[in-house]
Length: 288
Image (cartoon, rainbow, N blue to C red; front, side, top):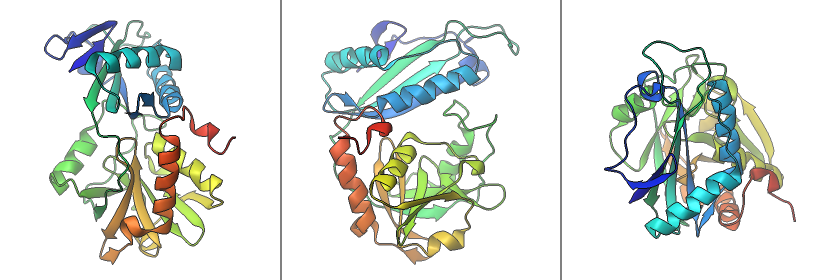
């Protein structure tokens, strides 16, 4: 499998960056993960927008466009003979001296990793378990999708390597936060609930897309600070991310949920299938 590194399409054995890259030395780097469906990079505009905002916050002076990234992606897909793929797009700060740097980074490293995936389309259920480990607070004003991933790694070690289980974080105040690699949702009546960004969670691209779908389907949207008790009173519970899509939850803290049989999980899944092969941005949802 070939990957893209700073203008070249090379094998993973050939891929090298300097140990003086501040993405390695100090964790100054960001990444985006998303899927390609039949050659279309789903919600690419939203991923690029979030990436560019994060780069500005890290003082990495680079800004990407849909056209620039998609051109690379299409050649990468062609060279690897892929039409459906997992994509990880990684930007690290680039070279610097040993020591903390206050000047902007002018030559970041851009790496794009592809991986073959099926076209998707199935609802895969999971059980949710409450983590003992608390969600750490963001390093800055908001959580970036950054190289600072130890909290997630330790949480994954806590629950073990079980593909049908997702761990759910509480924040430091005991409010529901997010999954190890997902955002959290539940539905009660005609209200779609999800934890507030004030809990320190990542504002996932699929999270934002599902909120948009909620509006489209005439649901009320509530983002707030919620206790475990409140989700246990829900009609349906699910988690989301850009690779696993909509993931129905079957049980959490002794409470069973309908999982993939849930009415709203099925509706969101149907909407996802409608848009995944053509949508560039969540802002276009509902437009004719």
